[in-house]
Image (cartoon, rainbow, N blue to C red):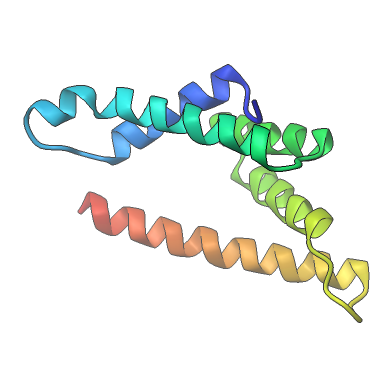
Length: 119
């Protein structure tokens, strides 16, 4: 598995909170999220070649989010992207800045979308 048991459980709980279903579906949507996440995590581990260092960083991202440290989570996501993606003709430090900026834009867009869903 890519994510730890605790991190998969945490993500599934957050998905359950974020998705408000109607009627009986609300009673089982958390279980569905947990099953789906386990299947995706298992497939990712079996079908993709993910370096152990990247797995550790992915779990560190979730750990940072769980502890409320969004800044560290953003930095770790940018580091993961930078370690996986190489932009030709761009220096490594410049790549890191590009990925940090991209992560901040994505986080901002997600926060805006989440706030719209809640209102």
